[in-house]
Length: 123
Image (cartoon, rainbow, N blue to C red; front, top):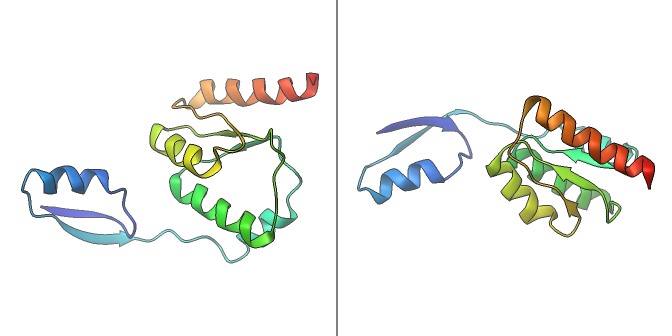
């Protein structure tokens, strides 16, 4: 099976095929890398109340940037992830914070983020 995809694909798809005895040939179609200025932008950003993380790669880049900057986020910062795979990764990387993980998107995601922000304003 030819499996075109990211330079660092999620392992589940190929693993299922390989477990079934299928020979999988992964061919890299693209690579996603953090921008050189990302670490500094994270270091310079105001303290967030909510962080929406769109992918496991974004979660990894954010974790590296925070560590590189020596930046500690407030313990009650809320993390929101729109998909199940990203939510699992965020929970693993940022579980010590007030991580909210969700598989919602669109209007439901907007509603959840607004509720977290309003909750913070009431506190």
